[in-house]
Image (cartoon, rainbow, N blue to C red):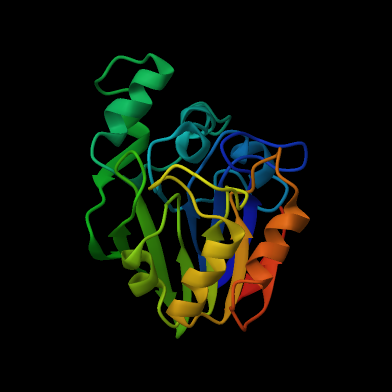
Length: 249
């Protein structure tokens, strides 16, 4: 299983990264985890834009889903004719949300290109992967995603505040892509985002192999986020997500 960081900026694209998107590949199958604004441009640096077999959307905030609208254009109007229909897994109402974002007629339009399927807590088979989801703490319906294949395990937090469910989901993961959007300040809003320190604490409790901090807000100092995580007590390797970083599990 190979994981490539396509976008890792939090809340909005930064100068060096689009918003959240991660490419997971195995056995010739390509799965995108999230498709935030700017992701499709970045994807083309690393992968053929039409060679995607499925998409999982963690939640319906724009920085995690909005480029599905322009990806619809890419798959529908490409020179060789429409690309094959692919499944898109997401929270309830994903189809309606994305159709409204593009101001399309509800039927058929985008549903001719994407086979929308509702995520629910628990496991689902997507190509060669077993993807297990858990609801996490965020102002909208939001999922963390655990992806397993061939003995390798990736867990992606999506967006979340402190979450025991995330710790359980990530247990024993080889790679933990964990959001660290907030700087460590007093009186942070609850059930919104993690800090570098709290991401490290979740990683330590879950016993993961490697922690990669992501969903990094452009106005925060990433070196401070990394320092906070390293002071959390997590004993494994910690690094900041970067566009183009590749992890083989």
